[in-house]
Each structure stands twice: as C-alpha cells, then as structure tokens.
Length: 94
Image: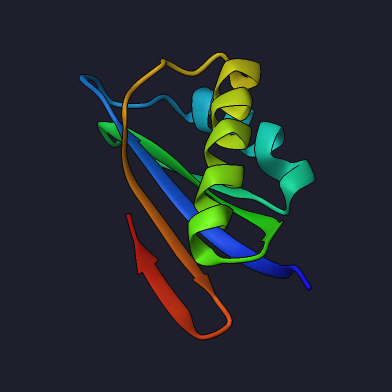
C-alpha cells in the first residue's frame, strides 16, 4: 500500500525572492497540501505531500509536481539543491 510522504524541496538562485513570488508559489502548491518558504532569501522551497511506495519514489513523484508549481507561480527556474522526505518515521536525503 502507498504511504503519504512529506517532501521538502529547495531551489537556490541568485537574488532574493519577493513576497509576491512566494505567495504565488504557496497558491500553486496549496492543492498538494503544500506550504512555501523563501521570502527575502536567495532560494525558495516548498513542502508538499505525495503518495508513494517508498521515500525514493516520493522524491521522484514530488520533483515534477514542484517543477510544475514553480512554472504556475512564475517563479525563477532555479536548480533544486535539496529534496528531503519525512514520513513513516524515516528520513531520506537525496
């Protein structure tokens, strides 16, 4: 059976994020039970909930959803620097 996993993803770039950009990202990840962060930081991130069989698979499921949310939000296309899974008392670092 599939489990729910909370996946935190961070992307880092070259300028501080504006409040409106993080608000837009928060709106874009809201359907995924998501929250966004990064106001004033040289990065942005989101924590989203996905269903998957394993922590590895949860990251594979979450990354494209995150990428879609970034496009929807109109945020800069910065490289993902961290993807971390929590769920079922297991921590996973890619």
